[in-house]
Length: 438
Image (tube, rainbow, N blue to C red; front, side, top):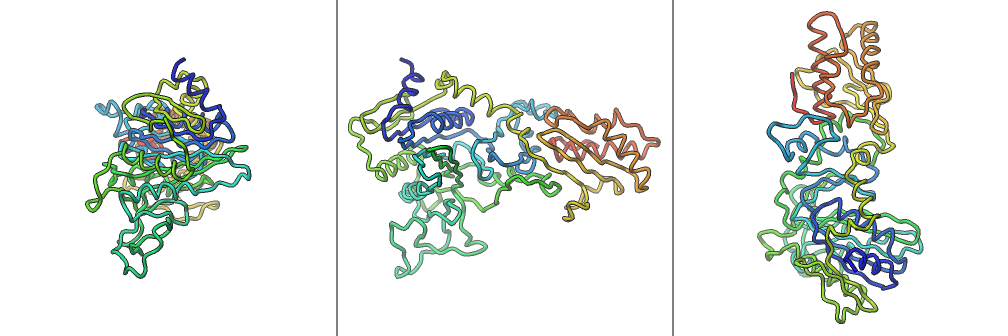
């Protein structure tokens, strides 16, 4: 029987505990295996699944990708970066993928220096229990004793000096450390964000562990959208936090495989699992073993042979799943009646009398009010002409606002024509991530 067939049998069996590690570094593969485990596993089982992904940005199921992701930076990290790709969003071939997961929470950045954990467990009362963050802290403390769980169920490092011994907490207390923290330079550094979801009798808690990310200094750039200050949306926003790696000059060297085994050992200890004759997963080979109490194995992309995992994988990679969820947002260059917030300064080349307001629902541009003139009557006429051109456009299929407006909207005089090109360039940059083209 194939690995995929054996895996399906194990997952649906009444074996109480499962431990799996993925050899794949494809985020769509790993999230689809995770979803399969959540949907198809025996309701009485508890499962630990560990994986490491290539560089990618993963947004929560209730989030807006235009609000969360710097598309201009994503475009700079394309497979074929010369010449730079400025086509529609649906066709970008990224070295840094962007995906929407199926759980809530905020946007995170994954790379090969980041270990991801997922625990799936019985949930008779439909209340997510974040005790597994405490389990992960116990594993991390083998390398860095500064780790603890905060009030948001994130894992942070306390960066300050060692406290007086009289103030040290109980070593088993996973919510306090023997190190100081405060504001500014002493603010706790986030090393793990987590999210959860519940369905029927099953709960899922998963999260990240920044072990030794080489991209630490640029993570905030990927997660800082230039469109966000101009948007009004009811989507769940991320909560920015200062981040750090688990490994520092003061800690011993560590590999992703080492940390995975520490998390596995913490899981075994937490659930008092009998692992007699069960070898722990080995990264070098794809294997599956089990006894009456525990199943264990190393997985890979061959599990795409399972139809549910294949369909989940394909859905996660589709631009429709990422960009066209049933959510509405407004993008506006200036404050207006429904959104009085001040906006950041516009580029000095943005036409001073121009105004832009777009309403986008499920990735479809449902209405627009774009004008160049300061005269209300002329502005209304301009807005009507422009709306007729761009209304009902799917954003993921848009090649360029600049080109669409410049070729299909006719204004008298060179200045209005120049202004419409510049407004189009601003929209290309802020929504599509294009290079600014004046």
